[in-house]
Length: 80
Image (tube, rainbow, N blue to C red):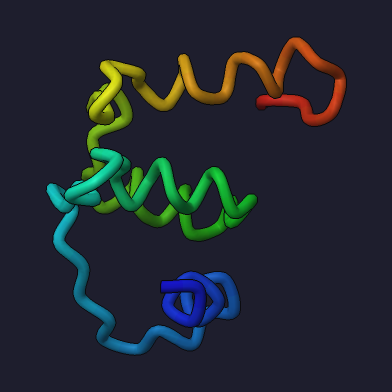
């Protein structure tokens, strides 16, 4: 998956197609959650613009915002 995110980050995706409703079978993480966890903000923005659901829950019932909250309050990373 890392190669796909790198392609999207570098605008090399061409006609790349992605299932916006995909969730990892083990964790329930969506592509948007994965992009954000990799720090791939261009990819995350593209996913949101394409219609990715920002309020989807993973297998633990956490949304993207709940997943990112520790980062925003720890001083390691600012959420914009």
